[in-house]
Length: 98
Image 1 (tube, rainbow, N blue to C red):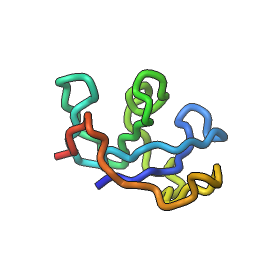
Image 2 (cartoon, helix red, strand yellow):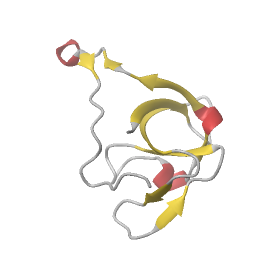
Image 3 (spheres, rainbow, N blue to C red):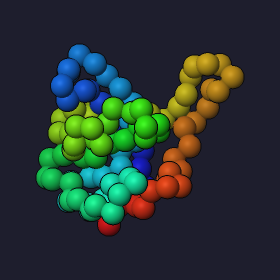
C-alpha cells in the first residue's frame, strides 16, 4: 500500500513537494513504461508524481534519502469543493513492489 508523502527536493532542500511513495528500502519496483526492475537501496525510497510526462520525481533523480520525507498527506483542504480524505488507490498502470 502506498501513501502520499511530503518531501524535500533532493537538489534544493528549501523546495517541498507532494509525491506518491511507491517503493521502500529493499523493495523491487518496475519502472513505469519500462521492463526495467530496480531494487530501492537501503535508507532510500522511490517517489512519483501523478503526471508521468511532466512530473519531476524519482524517474528523474532516482531514489531519495528517507530523511527527505517530512510527512504524510491524509486530507485535501483546498479547494473547498474537494475537502476530504485522500484516496489511497494504487495507480492502474503500475505493478506493486515485490
